[in-house]
Length: 241
Image (cartoon, rainbow, N blue to C red):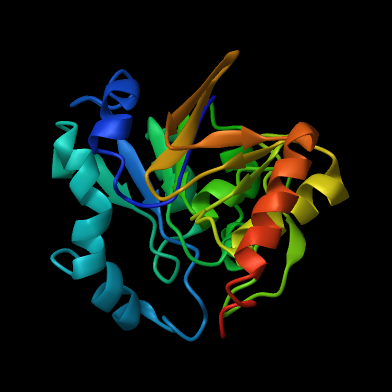
């Protein structure tokens, strides 16, 4: 299995293109699993098509980078939570080279994998598993959520495809993110891969490659992180949410 952890659908940009080109080609069969939507966003098949249907903005945003790698639209398939059955989902997974998990809410995504009866099939998939934001987090055995509109700081269970580290998605050097990295290092005692929006990580067996501006923070970085946090604290507290 190859794992690609990202923030956004911008992985066709210069900071990722060269590294990912060996994994994404015109022959790659992609399966999009948009299962991370909040229950208030989409409640039925009609609303699903209004968001992810062909020609819709989100549809175009998700497939655009794959097209940039020469993957034709006909090789990109989707799982529709409201229309697909377990059988059709499993068939699509078997026929895919790459599973792509979209961003959103990782806990909703995990629940829908259970609902569709495909969690085990994803865990046993031997191709490329790729995801943005929540779709990156869910690949881990355990991950933290940095506080924002929808979540307090917390830990959640993932698919267990990767372990031994955590990730900080959508990183900006502000109080919220710096404190989350500090807390995760102190709580879990494992390295944190810090990923700004133009950043990610590629893991292919023993190969581990940071993409773009991503970097690894560990216990040896805590003093510097505390100094950064103290400096940022001079300019005010947490942003309003």
